[in-house]
Image 1 (cartoon, rainbow, N blue to C red):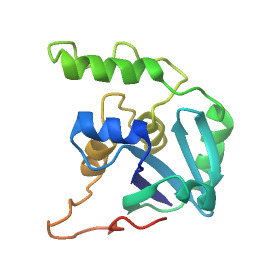
Image 2 (cartoon, rainbow, N blue to C red):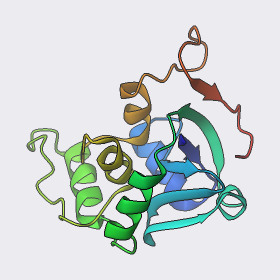
Image 3 (cartoon, one colour):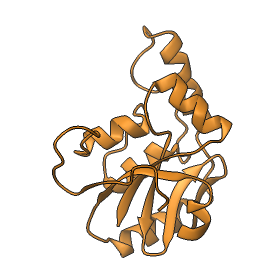
Image 4 (tube, rainbow, N blue to C red):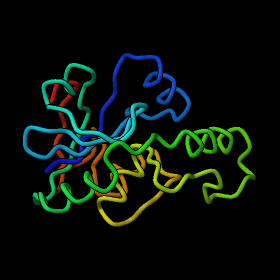
Length: 158
């Protein structure tokens, strides 16, 4: 299983990267030949081929496979809506940094991409960007000494 950190040329990805000043705009879980993630369409699975056609994997972190957990999570939350409220709060907090750090607009049962991945990993965080998650999970930025299971794709497809 890999946690993928991605970017694309679409307007949403470019805007997220511009606002956060970070190199990635999305994260997802790759399990076998499928990618499970939450995007504007909500929580769903798609084939790696379909996913790679829409984005570029900037980095990934490898974890032991946990097929029962991903299956249980997908059965419990598959089709859940995207957490637009949480995203709007993050944007509001970027403009008004005095707002509380806790995401006051997070909707239970809905997921940002980072909420989906952190929930799967057992540490839900609705105020973290994909790049901050990468660093929190021990990812090593480009140009730094490589360590652990971080894989750099240098802008290649999955």
